[in-house]
Every structure is written in structure tokens, then in C-alpha cells.
Length: 360
Image 1 (tube, rainbow, N blue to C red):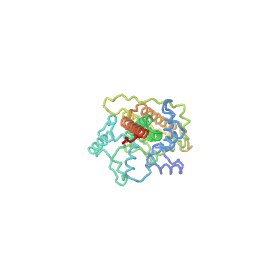
Image 2 (image 1 turned 90 degrees about the vertical axis):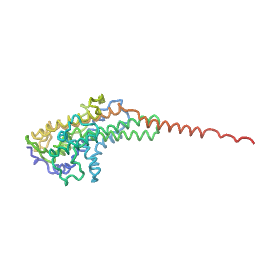
Image 3 (image 1 turned 180 degrees about the horizontal axis):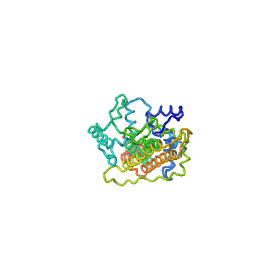
Image 4 (image 1 turned 90 degrees about the horizontal axis):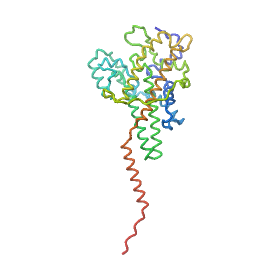
């Protein structure tokens, strides 16, 4: 098992200090994912997204959900914290096939709670002292967080169209600001999904049976998220030659009736989870970082860069899919038409000359 005794004390302290929150990719990594996605947008994508201030806003928002995690308020800690991961190994323990999980969050929650209660002996006991937010009863909801935020972005594109046709300049500006917000926010969760340690119970050092002797170090997650990116000085410019123009997802109906976007997102999560053991193996074989020489090993750099690129590609794909498949907001359109008609009637009434009083 690789020892971390050669890790610089300052970096070790910083890494261990952040490991408890399990934040996937440090802020710089999340920014890179969102920036890769921006660079992959097709030329016909709405031009306002390319305004420099908006692009910076999208990059900044990549870290928003992690900033929410810094609060001590338990309702927010539970609701937000669970959206950053999915321990896939727990699903079969509850009798659920990861390839067939339902698209609806609470349908899945009911299935999992029922399955967990029926197979409690398969799950580790929960220490109440470490479960103030009551999150340990759940495996996490990352794929649902991604799909739900995708839906919010699609809705924002829909009502922007209505406001562009019938709204005021202020309403159009606010709708565009909403789109920027949801694009940035969605990027965080998609970025989480590209980091394999967010799809496994082995999220911060190997747990349970460990025949291959993988590291159990409780700072491993934070080291992958930020320590390696910092030490390797990974920058956006390195990805430019590898970025391809995004195309929308194929939204053909699923044979099992599941939402096609959710099915694609779940597939993305499962693919990422398949890299958990290869990541641990890289660490064990000394192919992530050379601690004595304090430099990132080429294999380690390649692994991290590939995951950041995968996150950016998936994100731009979801952005383009939401835009391409926007459906009319008929309710808002109808309300705006009525408002326009009422305004026209009021104006006509004001402009109509007053009738002269009848002669006596």
C-alpha cells in the first residue's frame, strides 16, 4: 500500500482539512469542466452565452453547490449533500438494478428505503454521532440532481422564447440570467459525476474487504480533487485541442419507459464508476504522484485530465440537448398574449376622444 509519509505537511494538512466534505474537484477543477463545456458549444448556440461576463458567471457558479455545503443548517446539509454522489454498490444490496433505477427521485427513494429495510443486515450500522443530517440512510441522488437541473435549464430556454416574443426588455434580461444560472449550476453536478469517487462507497479510501491492498487514506478523495490538479498545474488551455463540438443526446423513447435524459445520465454515472478500481490501482502502483520528487506522474495527469474532459463534454451535450429540445411554454405565452391585449385595449381607451354631451 502506498504511503503518504512523503506528502508535504502543509499540503497534507490542507487536504485532510477538506476531506470530510467530499467536494468533487476543487473550485479550479469545477471551473475547468464548465469552461471546457463552453468551448464545446456549437456556433449557433444562443450568442448571449458568449458574453465574457456571462461566461465568467457560468465558471463561478460551477462551485455554488459546494459553497452551500459550508453551512451548518441541517435541512440544507441533507438536501444538498445527498445530491453530490451516488454509492452505486448500495443499490444491489437493496435489491435494485442500477441499470433499471426509475427516473423519478422519490419513486427511487421509496424503492431504496423499502429494499434497505428488508435487507438491513447487508448495510453497515449507522453511528448517530456521525449522522446529524440523517444522510447515511441514503446512497445519494447525483443522477437525479443532474436530470432535474437539466429540466430547469430546459424550462428557462422555453420561457425565454415567450419573453423574447411578447415580454419586456427587463423580462428578457432576467430570463437570460436564469439560463446562465442553471447552466453554471448544472455544471457542478455533471462535474461531480466525472469524478469516479463520487459514484462509490470507496469515496475516501477503500472500505471493507481489500484484497488488493488499496489505500485507506481518508485524504485520498481531496487529494484527487485538488491536490493533483494543483501540483500538475492543469489549465484550461491544455484541453483546447481535444475539445469537440457538442451534439444533442438521442432522446428516443426508452423501452422501459424511463426518461431518456435520465437514462443517459445514469449511463454516464455507471461509466464513471467503472474507473474507481483503476484509479485506486494507479495510486497503489505509484502512477498518480511521485511523492519523493513531488511531481505528478504522467499516467496520473492523463487520468485526471481525461475525467475533466469527460465532464466538460457531457455538460455541453446536456446544454445543447436542453436548448435543442425546448418546448413552448404555452401557459406563459397565453398569459403574455392576454397582457398584450389588455394593454392594447387600455391604450385604445385612452386615445378614444370623449363623447360630447347630448344637446338639451
